Length: 251
Image (cartoon, rainbow, N blue to C red):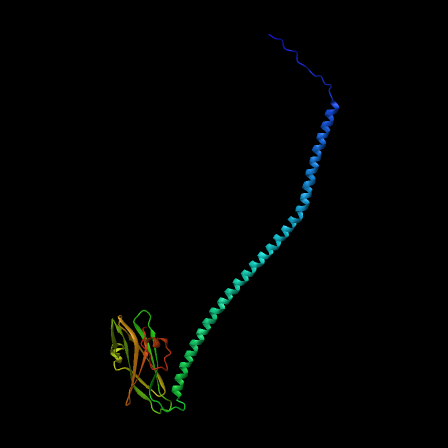
């Protein structure tokens, strides 16, 4: 076997001072990096602080604006509620006034007819017809107002009867007074007055009968009978004082 050459060793002297210098340089570089990082953080913090303060100020402004808008919405809602309540009350007041005006006009017509004024003397007249349903039944309370001019010097006497036109099934039918009134008043409702009088009665209709019109006839003793026809709905309204009836109307 061939022999190996002996290994070569290089002997260098130990440089302790060089190692210390390298360590010092490394330490200085590390400290420099720390100082650079700290300076950078300080610089960035100094630039970010005004932005943070500005954002906080904007947030406060937006919060205040939001609160103000919420308050405005609440005020508008309350104002709308108050306006709605006032509108409802006003409509009710107007409806009451309209009803009151209608009643006053009816009274005016009644008293104008009663007083006569400069108009020629008029005889007996069926001034008003009113109906009021009796709850839970097919009965109605009937009120008939009769008048004559105050120029009349004598009492007027006689009887008044009522008939009802309507539908039973598909047929037109008329119920006469004997089928409506009390058997004790089969001849009619008696009256005796000089200026005016109200007659009261209760009428009952069959369950399968649909009324459309009321006919009132007043027969004075020794005179010609007077008649008046009004629709059932007008009689229920209670303010029929001028028109001599109208077209048929379902109840």
